[in-house]
Amino acid sequence: MGGTLRLVCRCAHMQILRSLYDPPLITPHGVQFCLDGGDKKVHCIVTRAALIFLAGHALLERDYQTIFEVYREEIEGAASHRYQDGHQQQHRLIVHAHDLVTYAHDIATSDKAPAAVA
Image 1 (spheres, helix red, strand yellow):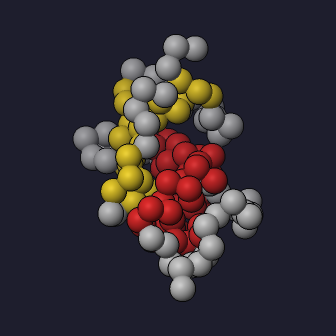
Image 2: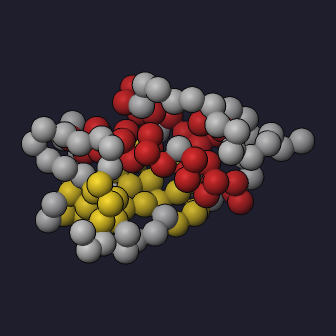
């Protein structure tokens, strides 16, 4: 499909796709990523606090990528729901921990997450 992957989460009126040409970018504030919403690219970031929530313990910046990849479907699903709920396109869509609680109901602990920092 030339640059996009279908997400498990689809909405009735618009399908949000994972952008293959815009890989996730790790920052001190979280992980930036893009979704394709038809003719619009949706710029997103999952916050450091949301990543820590998913991991269940404090993280080092080098661990953000691992947590993002382990919980990518849940993070992108929450972003997709936020977008469908009327996100303002001129601003970056921010995925907070409360969005994961609200939109990603079946978050399970993963053995692939890095161990807690001592």
